[in-house]
Length: 217
Length: 304
Image (cartoon, rainbow over all chains, first blue to last red; front, side):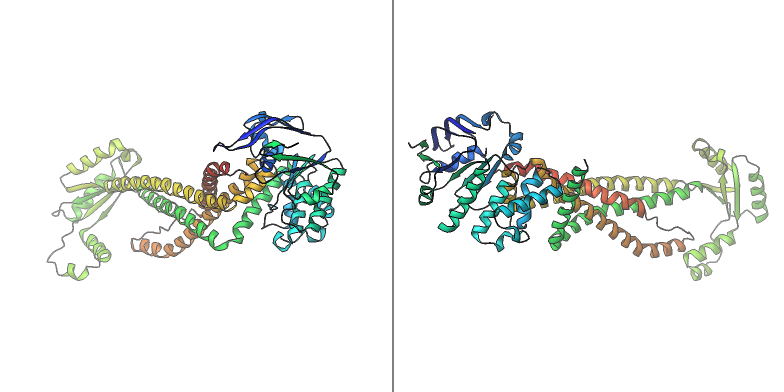
């Protein structure tokens, strides 16, 4: 599903975030991306989400070679990827419902379909009763679950998460990971960047470990 | 297709809702735009009224014959009888020196001064209205010369000259209004552009999030364009209301003034025409301004 072949990412200040990285993630696989701060985790996710492009090498996601994807097609590519952020990235002047509905509104779904799928996603993360609230009225864990609902509402084949449990206590973190496992069980390819080693040691998934921009075997 | 239109309608109302939630700031922008639009519109109404006034006078192009002072009323009567036979003259009206004095006394209000004069300084006059044939540009000059050459006539004066001057002035005023309208339209575009620019900057993080979940540039642009539309449209309505109120305040005094000149002239409001044209123009300018801002700033905001 995700294939990195000899990927380099060099920033204008000559800092090399990724140096000849190669790895594969199969369709329907769930894996963790770990490594110290500055090891290149965020850069790797940014390359998958096409927030940035690699300097060299090949990134293929779902049969799509990202280096040849024109700029105007990026929005449509991103609709196939759900992204969960550490700081949630919710819109604070809109209700929970409207936040989760955003990807569907953008994709031009019909009114009824939006209502149905948003409620299904909110039900999945256990926040159906809070659809009318503003994000500010929710706890950190709840906000993160709204972010997850938004990431999965248009049923993307790939789910990326960047430190989704970074600000949560162990119990809430466990719940969040549990959600990701549930999505994985229905066939979604899940890739979670985290440094919560204690938590992922208890889970039976592959770990992609980065060290100074390379795979650390 | 219905879905597409429905979505546009939603964004349109959503943008209006955003303005509504910031009433003071929105009202200030709308007022600025309204004032910028009301100036050229008001001057347009003024100049159109001046044109219509001069058109009324057009048909009444006439020649005033100032008769020699020595002429007796009988001789004058004889002259007007002769002139009636001319094919270039439609009709004429004789006014004796006494009548001239009376008229002047009434219009000028200088009755007592006039009474103190030893004799009537005003001549008798004949007001000649040329026939259609005589009123043509080529022939009217000839007619004036002919009348001037009559021994009984001191001077024949065509009342068109001042009208032509009036028209030239009006033409100049209209050109000035056009220039002013262009400049003020530009200022509306820039004012709305700047407002939209600030709106874009204040929604920077929101735009980032929308791009991350797959929003196209067009989708992100749309609410800002509609915001520009609303600013311009509402500014146009504001201008219209201001203009109508101003006209209401002016129409009384204008009629009164016209009354003093014995005219039934009253202001033409162009209310319906401007009701269509002002909000429409405003909306177009608003969309242009928004487009300008969106084009310059939206692509700079990318997720990071």
